[in-house]
Image (cartoon, rainbow, N blue to C red; front, side, top):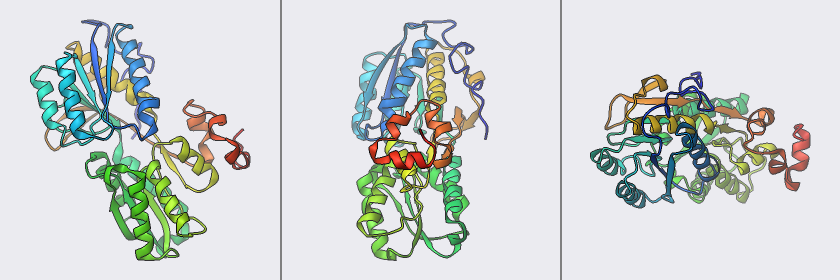
Length: 351
């Protein structure tokens, strides 16, 4: 799927309709799920704040809270936002199902809700994320490319994300659609809370069950877990390391790709996702229609026909680090190519 930024207004906010009418001095409640993954504090929060400012001509306020992977805390944060009389909520749910009651309370208070990055249940008004099944397909295809002729002879281990995250289910489905029938899946795990230490334990169990010489590759749903997986492989004396996938283009993940410890990540351009969330949130707070902003209609288990903007992901390997995360200003060469990685950077022309 190809998504034009025109689907969610211009990237600088000048062509969209939001901010052009109605109240501009609005309060946007922003609830993000955790702070272990670098993206939320480094990218999502400041990008959304910047876009809200653009779409409200600097008059809008973002009221922020982070749930630190605690679903109950996030439900309480929604209630606190309702008490503060925010005009709209942007919620990246810790637990998509557990948030439904809080979303209903917001709706009852006539506060529109934009589900961000994860498809929250309950009566949400809009949704923006990445094309998650496509992300899983990108990961699966990259793993097959890395395995080459070995795809049919060894076993792979699949380390998926948390069952409380609907995105994890979609990544998993996309990956299976590419991998099934082409590889033997020796072990597969759903990883509690996406935590690297839990992924490490899963990988250690897989090595013990399959044997360290029997693992041809590892599907890891994100970079944080890939770090835990690679640590388990090293601790077991697996050498050379099998190809390991990832997602999010976190700095540590990009550095592992540079060094060859991790085969790939998925680079997701947070700017268009944040712009879509901000523009839809401002429009909803102002009572405007968002039909012209969306590019998809999706269904959640509890709500049908949710207006949505979905953004594609990009396979990140050694070959395109410079033309993706460096050119987009996500990470600088100096940040990636520290002393430990300088020689590897030189080898791939990253200067």
